[in-house]
Amino acid sequence: MPTSRRHAIPNLPTPDFTYDPHAAGACVAGVRPFRNGSYRLDSELASGRFVVHNYGHGGAGITLSWGCAAKVAEIVKKRIAVSHDTQVAVLGAGVMGLTAATLLRDLGLEVTIYADRNPVETTSHKAGGQWAVSVVAFAGKEQELKGIIKTSYTTFKNSIGAGFGVSEVPNYSREVTPGLEVVRRLAPGLMPERESLMRMPFENHTKPGFKYQTLLVEPPIFLLRLENDLSARGVTIEPRQFISKSDVFSSLPQKVIVNCTGMGAKKLWNDQDMEPIKGQLAMLPKQPALKYLYGQDGYMFPRSDAVIIGSTFEVGVDNETIDPAKCKSLVRHIAALFGQAVPVAMPEYHIHHPRNARLFDPTLPTGV
Ligand SMILES: Cc1cc2nc3c(=O)[nH]c(=O)nc-3n(C[C@H](O)[C@H](O)[C@H](O)COP(=O)(O)OP(=O)(O)OC[C@H]3O[C@@H](n4cnc5c(N)ncnc54)[C@H](O)[C@@H]3O)c2cc1C
Image 1 (cartoon, helix red, strand yellow):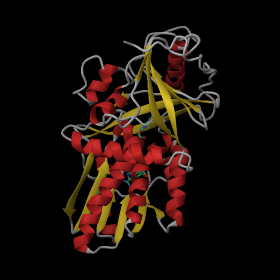
Image 2 (cartoon, rainbow, N blue to C red):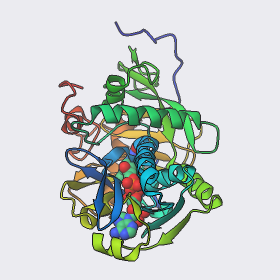
Image 3 (cartoon, rainbow, N blue to C red):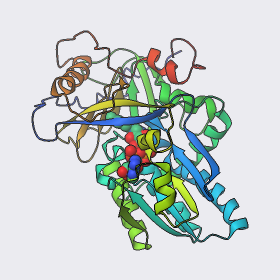
Image 4 (tube, helix red, strand yellow):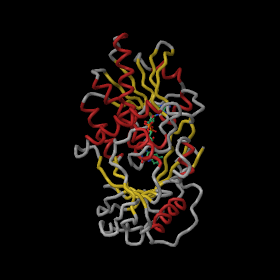
């Protein structure tokens, strides 16, 4: 039976959806590095180098970062116990590269990051930042993912209040949220249990729904903190663009290489399973009174720098060109759910629909 909240929760503030899609920075676009079948987290010996791959995390790279970095460090630790290498090259300065570099430095290794984009220019910097296992394939890797999820969640949760841009927030949704249902299934008890609500706590949005308690990781704060901490520990980011795998091997001296190139791995490692999924986000002015996330056929994440409304879901599209009309439609859709705009038909590029979620996690029951 749903829990009655009719008298228990006062209404939460309704967002201000005033939006000019043509204002500078009002619409941003990034490309999710999605990998069909599964993300890649393994190692190989090639041209006398030990290469650890850590890419293909689609729409969940921020979420899975610490857990994947711990696996990378575990793999490298085993290797250096035998090879006695002391230097490691990390390719990529997105969230995967920076978190892996952090834990490799913890092993006492001399770490150098090589990338053709600085953290602030990466896809990671553009992410919304909800902690949820969304838009990532993990066929045959349920056990591994379970460990990754646990490590990531625990690490992020332990960093609340320590300047990493992490906070614990409720997420309200009309339907269950697939990216959080995966967590409930694989790691029951890790997060607070979701609540069923007879009524959403908003003035003009009073249908039944669900409340999850999850984390918000603000990428601009998180990445800058990682970058500064690494720099203080002697880890530099060298600007470098690699054009092929053999270019990597011929230009780098390190015998241990960690490949965190996201979408770049498609070309560098000729990985045909990599598939770009473009996502556009509308950025509204910050609204500090909003202390909750919202998700249904799109989402709204109030952060300290902006209110993020996302996201489009453009499969096979590998460019970062913004389309202000699409950003406007994202805002109008969420505004309509809050009774602040006239409802319109949901465009096909909205992501947070159960039928999309099942593309990535076919084990989800129909209707989830
Ligand atoms: C709109 C949108 C919203 C998102 N929201 C969320 C969210 O709420 N929560 C969440 O967990 N995730 C979210 N994501 C997903 C997340 O952003 C990605 O999974 C994550 O950024 C991937 O990190 P990465 O380090 O693998 O790749 P990137 O951040 O793309 O970094 C790749 C790095 O590799 C370097 N590189 C690549 N090729 C080369 C080359 N040839 N030579 C040299 N360097 C190279 C680049 O310069 C860059 O530094 C979102 C993504 C988008 C697009």
